[in-house]
Amino acid sequence: MADTILSVDGLSKSFGALRVAEDISFSVKEGEILGIIGPNGAGKTTIFALLAGNLPMDSGQIVFQGQNISVAPAFERARLGMSRTYQVPKPFSHMSVFDNLKVAALFGGGLEEVETEGWIGQVMDLTGMTAARNILAGRLPLLLRKRHELARALATRPSILLVDEVAAGLTDLEVDEFINLIKEIQLSGITVIWIEHVMKTMLTATDRLMALAGGRVIAMGKPQEVITTDEVRRVYLGA
Ligand SMILES: Nc1ncnc2c1ncn2[C@@H]1O[C@H](COP(=O)(O)OP(=O)(O)O)[C@@H](O)[C@H]1O
Ligand SMILES: [Mg+2]
Image (cartoon, rainbow, N blue to C red; front, side):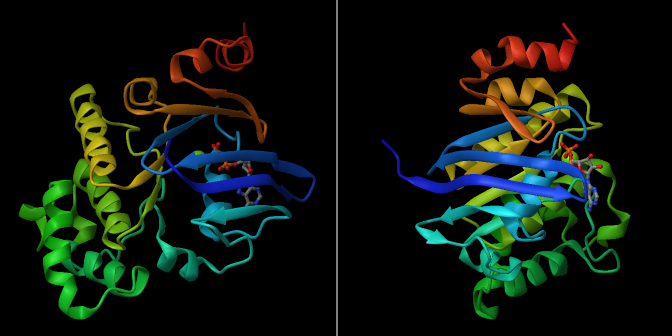
């Protein structure tokens, strides 16, 4: 059985009176893809922000690769191998695709200058960005913008990748492309947590699924089983 790479215990966060994460506990095994589903406002993105250190939690504990990172600043978590994408990508739009990846590798990942060229070449190959390497990030069309966001997160050489809704607004074919890409990322040895609304991605790509509603975990387990639980059906279908 694979080792646990990330373990989250009793994670809680409120914004004023609004509880956006309530006693959330889960663990992720090395090499797996854990999917997270839940209606808008369920607290999915907040969990990423708490994991990556973009937001301080109110209480709880996060252990990553055996290290308690609960109060570690974001840059330190990135250096340790945790990387996330953003629902609304904010690359340096006046810089090329390549230069954006270089900044991520050097400053996010702490790679040495001499390693970057070769490494970024691999990342661009994997994400299908090689032909776009000299394009200014701000000029990329939607699909490439999304692949670039994934590439920027990968450039930091993470051991765990947090992917926040890349499939929204894509065609069926493009969604399939992302499913394959995330699976290839998994094959390359990276653990993935993937938030997505497009159910096909969650049912075909994930090893386990966690369903959230109102800042709480309402179901966790095999994808097919999770989406057919009464609680999840109630939240999604109002049944
Ligand atoms: N910085 C913030 N300040 C106040 N409320 C916030 C903040 N960020 C998110 N929220 C609220 O927290 C809830 C959960 O948001 P979010 O984690 O983005 O949900 P999801 O990603 O599941 O759609 C929402 O009600 C949202 O409006
Ligand atoms: Mg979100």
